[in-house]
Length: 240
Length: 192
Image 1: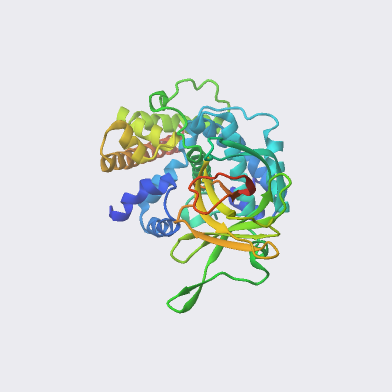
Image 2: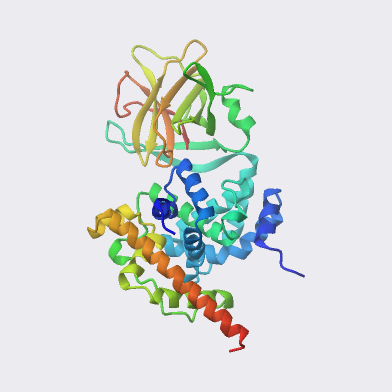
């Protein structure tokens, strides 16, 4: 029996549905044997692949990566942030390390202090939002300062980037710390940090519903407000 | 000793049993790696995707629900989606459209594992019942990770048409495969 929901089968298999749409389609699957059978059939398609012998050391590499992940913190070897800047340079080597995200609520909430829950005002009522990712920002070179970035999903599915920093070096003149979301080297301005005494500052930036394309969050030290592309140095960053 | 089922292994993995994860890894390494190499045409990317899949399994990202189908089907879908995410992050499909290649590769002699060989034979037979256009749809959409939008753009065919062609191709493949499987089962029962 075909209905409108069956039309969404292709979108479902593309894996591109928003979580609510996917839930709705999965509810449809329980009632629609036809769609269910097609999806089940796709489980046979991988056998069309030519058998490829896996590299002998791959198992060791993968399992150690999986179990290393358990420690919740880890460091990558050296990686490179690719960031297209005003002056035309595109690469900026940064030693990265990160806090594994997503699992422990305690870890996730540590960003804003124990027991803190994100609250948003909605018609006068406090609405709890869900933090879906949290990463520690790593200072570049000898920069003094620390911070964490987290992604919060609102009830409407909108995502907000929250960046909280501490011990940032103080600014002079018109300087400002600017937050960027980066997708494959292309930065999008995502807020400013103006540290008060003690170097603490928090920025919030709502950027839509799709996190997938953003791979990095970075903070630069800019000579002034309003830059559309980074001009200054990256001081803190983390992969998302 | 009776072979422990995938679902049992999955439950043990949820209970943080490392040996269970390793067992599941051994069970699926070859098919998942082969599938990923076919999708990405890149062994390094295939390994990266496979690692991501097992990290997701270990972290419990995405939950298998028996009500939604078999474990292997769920695992293959999760694997495919993981590869698609990686490919999209790199803003590339695996290979250019014109190099997408044939879906059915006649060189079956390299296939050692009996189960694989049998399954593959059956699926190939079902695929051969599709029209060339339907085969291409499945090749591009399922294996090469092109979205229906991309296929529409590249082939100049309207979006809605591409979407229904993919659905029809998958639907027909499902029917042919069921038919072949039923026939195979009947042959087995009759001892033919």
